[in-house]
Image 1 (cartoon, helix red, strand yellow):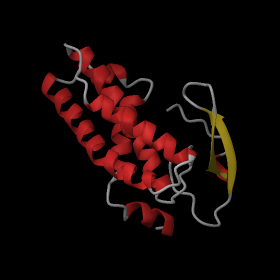
Image 2: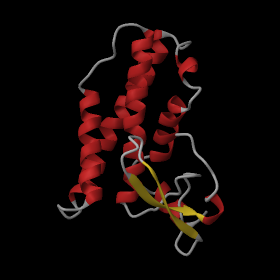
Image 3: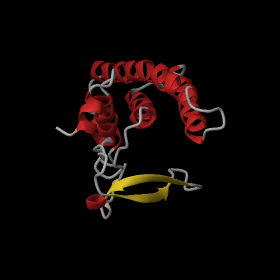
Image 4: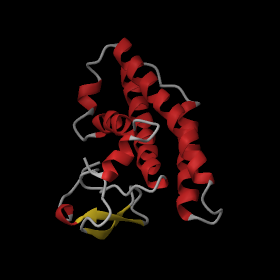
Length: 168
């Protein structure tokens, strides 16, 4: 196991499991898979995602507040936290499709906070394979469009992953 992977696994929160749970709901073909869940299973999933957000938000906030006030990562992380807390204060619309849509909204917030958490703790993750980039490991800078398409986010990517495309 690499030292960087060990740093992620030693973190107080299991962001890998939280991230994986959220990403399963956000895959392009996940929507039909959610609706066959029973109402109880969907409610359990929503409670799990809400619990993830309740654990992640204060941890990410604490780390973000340690950054300088004019720091872009601080501003972005705090905006993400506000968004997540807003989702926690809402409820799903009636019916299974409303609950499924709400679960996906929660999953997007969980995924975003899971991505900030290791970054704010000083761990670089490859956006293609979602594995840590170790010190001295070959990597390349990479800009890619934000979900809104209005800006570019910059990150490092494993040199071997530079031609990989992720859908989520």
